[in-house]
Every structure is written in C-alpha cells, then in structure tokens.
Length: 522
Image (cartoon, rainbow, N blue to C red):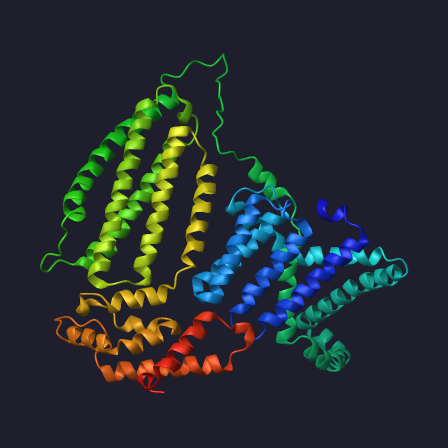
C-alpha cells in the first residue's frame, strides 16, 4: 500500500473508486468502436479535471502543469488537424502528465515515463487492494467479502491444476472427463456471454483510467531520480598511505590522451568544415551527373552519426573527476572547440537537406531530418554547457527531454500534409516532385489536389521527359481515377462517422469538396 492510500478515509477511497469507474464508462462510451477525434480531447479534459479536483492547482507541480497543458494542446490539435503526431503526443503527454501529478518530486520526463509504466503494471494488484480495503471497512459485508476472497482463489487454482493434470495424465483425464466436460458445458455459454471483446475493452478502459487517476507505484522512481543532480559532485579516491605512488596519475594520462585525440579530430573537422562552407554554404549548384540523393541521404546520416559519436566521446572524456582536474584547461578548450565545430557541421547538414528540398520538394522524411538535426544541435549546446559549467549527464538528459517534448508538441500545431502538398505543387522543378506521394497523404489534401489537377498533369509531363522515370503515376486518367477512389472512401467514412470521431479537418475537407462541385466529379 502506498503512503497516499494509507491516509485516506473509507469515504475518500469510495469516491476515488467511483471516479475511476465513471471515467472508465466515459472511456468506453467515447472510444469503443470509434476512431480518434473529438473523443480524445474530451477524455483528456475529463482526466485533467479529475486530477485538478484531486490534487488542486497548487498541489500540481510546475512540470505537471506544463505536460498536462501540452496534452490539452495536442488533444485540441487532434480535433483541429487530425494528425498522427498529434494523437501520439496527446496520449504520451497525458500519461506522463498524470505521473507528474501523482509524484510531484519528479523533474525529468524520462523518470516520469518510468513511473507511469510502473504505475500501469501495478494497476491490477492496486485495484484489488483498494477494493479489499473498502470492503473490509464497511462492517457487516466484510465477513461475506472475506469468504469470497478466501474461496475464489483456491477454487481457481484447483480448476487450473485439474486441467494441467488432465493434459498430462490420460487416465486421470478419462476419470474426470465426465465431470469437467459437464462443468464446462454448464458455464461455457455463461462465460462466453460475459467475456466478449467489449468486456475486455472495458477492462482495458478501467485499467487505463486507474493508472491515470490513482497512484499504485511506490516512491522508488522519485527516490532514484533524487540521487541525481544537475551539478557534478567530485568523488575523491585516495590510495592507502602504505601503497607506493603511481608513476603517472590516471587523470593525467587520460588528459594527455584526450588532448592528442582532440587536436587530431579538430584538425580533421576543420578541413571538412572549410570544404562545406566553401561548397555548401554559398552558391551551391548541382553539377551535371551529380547524385544529390547520395549526397543527402547517405552523406547526411553519416555526418549526423559523426556528430553523435563526437558527443559520446566528449561525455566519456568528461565523465568523472576529469571535470575537476586542475590541469584540464586545454582539454576543456579543445573539447568546446570541437563542439563548436560540430555545431558548424550541423549547419552544413541542415543546408544539405535544404538544397535537397529545394531540388526535390518536401516530404515527411526530409522534415524528420530537420527536426532530428535541431534536437542534435540542442544536444550540442547542452553538452557545451556541461563541459563549461561541470554539469551532469542527468542535466543533459533532463534538458534535452524537455526540448524534445516542446518540439514535438509544437509539431502537432501544423497541418503538415497540406503544407507538403502546397509546397510541392508550387515547386519550380516539376520533373523531380514525387507525384505518387500525393495519393499517400491524408484526406485533408483532396481539395488541394482537385484544384490543382492541371499542375499535377504538368508535373507528369515533365516526368515523362526524364531519362530515368522513378514515379508510377504518369497518366492523368490513372491519377484521377485513384484520386476519385480516395475521395469516395473519405466521403463514405465521413457520412458514417459518429460524433465521437468528429474533427475540424474532415469537416473543412468535406465542405471544400462540396463547394467545388463538378470539379470533384460528384
């Protein structure tokens, strides 16, 4: 039993169980048999209100308020934009925000996620304990509940071992076959009627709501995180006085090795950066026969891997008392110089991706590279601060976790499907746009494509003039037929959708298609 439950009165425990039950009923009503839409936003609001009612605004830590606010924003974007990233971030932020509400001592998103998972694992045991405590505190019913609790588990175990023995011993199986088969025949229909898919979904809803609203996990995760600090603490290791002194201190050997290594790699990276600045930064042009795809796809990821390896090396060199070594001034300077050079290299990688987009258009993977690179550059800045100010790895993990959360929540506010299609339709290099990708986008781009079918046909014409043809859709009639099929699937889904699945993106798309009339073939 957690300290939180030991201080609760029986009435408070009843109210908590009642709130979980009502939330589970709402979960079932909102999500059973329905796609995500308005229902996710309503559920996030319900959970946030229940957490606020239980812990109060002052009782919620600043981190809990921030993450729950992010969950509400992402939930609103599910309703407005109806994007996959908004759905994923809304659910993750809600789980982490509930964990931060339950354990206000947590400071990092990583440990909050661990607490959330631990709490979810403990739900079955915690719920049974809560029900047990409530039942035993109600006077007269307690005797009956004790008999149920005492008799149910032995009965289930007897049935389990009976089945195991029947499977392992043919004669025992023959001896008990009549009784057991009759028993299953009597209860089979009953169990089949009780344990339906909807029943299991409601049990899932009950477990989910219990994990969000009740705390079952111990404070072990918070205690573990509490042992980590942002600032490094020096640990002195002294040799016994009776041992002979070492020929060279290990820190000094490591410092010399690090200085030699950083001098060499700084020189190498300086050459790479000078080449990239002269080649990629100013007046970049695609030479005849030059593989821009290899230049970006393979070159970009290799350079990103080199940046990540550089970060790991710096974290290794400054992992302990080397941070406090009085003679490490040049090691720190060389390390910070290398981090600055890696930041410049990161800008070069960004420009490679920019040139690729300016030549081939936008795509989700290219946007993903930009987002990942931005997080890597933030990591370089925090690593620079770690070396300069003697910060810990926990500091880096905490700050970068919050940076990733802010970036991903920000991504939910943009309609990326429409942004990509608009950019590619207006792109100057019509023979290098991925036409096939138009049909793989979400339904919200249908009005854009119908309004710009002439542009798509021009892009097809340019593709047919290419020496190497790498798209499948080169005939306008085929493209139009598949686009109409995509529209028909959307309209059928929209017309049969329930209020729980409602979202503004589908509504805007449907109204735009209706306004276009004959242009959509309807």
